Amino acid sequence: MNNGIYLLWFVATCLITVESFAEDLYLERRPIPEYINPSIYPYGISYSAYRDGESPGQSLTSKEHILQDLKIISERYRFIRLYGSGEQAKNILDVIKSNQLPLYVMQGAWLDGNSANEQNEKQIASLIRLSNQYPDIIFAVNVGNEVLVDWSAHRFDKVENVLSYVKRVRQAINQPVTVSDDYNFWNKPHARLLANHLDFICLHAYAFWNNQPITDSLAWTKKTYKSIVNLYPDKQIAFCETGWPTSRIYNDGSYEGGLIGVASEENQRSFYKAFNQWVFDQGILSFYFSSFDENWKGGFDGINPMQKAEKHWGVYNASRQPKAALAR
Image (cartoon, rainbow, N blue to C red; front, top):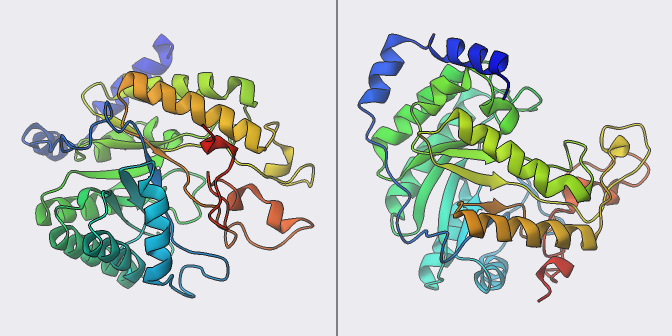
């Protein structure tokens, strides 16, 4: 960061309200539990249970399928990230508990700045209820996913709206509380207002979506992570989303079609191995994106809709078969 940008950041962050500053002084930050130890289990993974023909708001996955998924995941991972607090999440937590699976959860609430407030309230209420019902499984919670970065389709216009949810959740549960968002939110001055009230920061950064080739992907990822660490030296920064797709569309006039990164199993394997080694060496809590391909994502428009990258971030395909990234 050059001196001019740093000065602008410093001045902007000094303009936070006195009330927020005072609250931050007395915020007793809750640490990530010791059993979530990156030196023993250096990385986690995101999980969405939806299979082909299923999608949010349309259908739920059976507990039998969830158990199959979690047995596969637990062969390699010890903690997973869930994005919403609806019935699907309740079923996942039930399966973990009833089968005594060796998995711990960072539980999310799915917030949407375009939805009726009632839907967001339901997510917050359920997040609180699940966190208190499964305290031995849910080790942390994230209040919203990519709800403040400028390009989000479910963006909140004001940081204060999300902050109000964070405060309510934190008062009602015992687990550490965070918000998951892109680096292009966390590097903005107004992000400090929210960060002051979090126990740790959940960072997203994708070299692929930021038009990097696979050869530069890890260097870009490291540089981006370091830039956020430098802005928040007093906070633990977890890497909560990154990855590389195994399929994409090319040259169709869309943003994705114009990117330079080549999607393939070999390139995913290259990034996955290098990223995991880096977070292990640095002791960074991380969640790779993602466990399984999700064919419901990304829409079905265009010439080759099933090739869209959104559908192909998993280290397992939609049929639950491992890709090259997981080869020994």
